[in-house]
Amino acid sequence: MLNFDFYNPTQILFGQGQIAAIAKQIPASARVLLVYGGGSIKQNGVYDEVLAALADFTVTEFAGIEPNPSYETLMRAIAQVKAEKIDFLLAVGGGSVIDGTKFIAAGALLEEDPWTILEKRGNNIVAAMPFGAVLTLPATGSEMNSGGVVTRKSTHEKFSFMSRKCFPKFAVLDPSKTYSLPTRQVGNGVVDAFAHVMEQYMTYPVGAKVQDRFAEGLLLTLIEEGPQALANPDDYDVRANVMWCATLALNGLIGAGVPQDWATHMIGHELTALHNLDHAQTLAIVLPSMLRVRKEGKRAKLLQFAERVWNLSGGDEDTRIEAAITRTEEFFEQMGVKTRLGDYGLGAKDLDGILSALEAHRMVKLGEQRDVTLDVSRKVLEMSL
Ligand code: NZQ
Ligand code: ZN
Image (cartoon, rainbow, N blue to C red):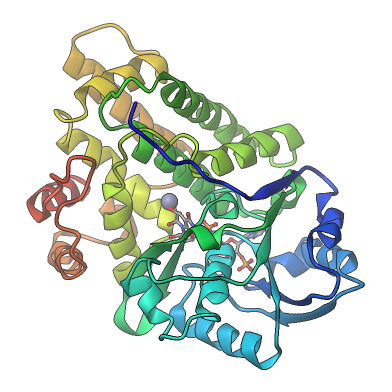
């Protein structure tokens, strides 16, 4: 097992009715800015419940954080925070709203232009405003991690940042608030969580048995419960399991002490920035080909994955590995997330643009062995056509 330094201070309030508990988590004198997206929270009752919980606070709002939150929108929020002397942020929504709130929290206290947070991947964050989250979409893990991803629309760039100052103080996870999700977002969430586990598990063995078993448990649960969430959308326990899986998939626990990959995510971010695909759609396209192209470097873990996750133990090694990757692809399709570039109207003509963006952003040595060069990324994309 590799050395690690695991830190996660986010308090989790899990279950039905927990929104009411947020009042106890926010300082009584706080001026609170409620940050949310395009309005789904007004349709499913979350907005009313949050306002009822905050009845004794001074609350103002910033609405309109878009999926793949934009720097441009977030800069307007930062201006509002300063003008209204806000001292606590409450993100209510999915990963985009929570990521956006992290950027606002750090950007509002930064002397330089907040864009530098993205250029420097969060390394220049010295402080962030305190914030909490009410999660409505299980997918990203943003509710219990310190990362965020922001897009600059004007330049079609999507960058991630990370800082220990950017953990939410608390996060409410009420599975009943996910009943209203459109099927597309249910599928996206399960695929994103699955990919997060894979980025930290599907590398090479380092004798980290606990992390491996946790990761396999999360994958098996997503495979079992994901399709149930589509078939029985109002089943509380199904939603609860999916929600907790997504959080545990990227809260640092399974990634402690193991090598990590993230090449699929980096290519995926370019696809979203250039062609506006949903985050999980990009992962469903890239991940299966990434595993095929890098089969040799990942052989031992692919065989472990085939046996423990997909129950494939017969036949020769290459047959088992290919079967496991095919089953993964079929699972993404079963969740309603298409797995080929062509499914989204993209083709060979688009590859040069994606590769140029990777090069411009110095994404030329990706993966746990730093061996995913532009040539490897090209092969992956060609295999995903
Ligand atoms: O904006 P509203 O109206 O709220 O609607 C949203 C949005 O249209 C809707 N939605 C959310 N909860 C709902 C709901 N609709 C009905 N009922 C509910 N309960 O869903 C749509 C998508 O929301 P979004 O927040 O964009 O989705 P997601 O949670 O998948 O977040 C995606 C963003 O997170 C980043 C992605 O790159 C992308 O920008 N990621 C963040 C990570 C992190 N912080 O650690 C890691 C991930 O790998 C990922 O990169
Ligand atoms: Zn992701």
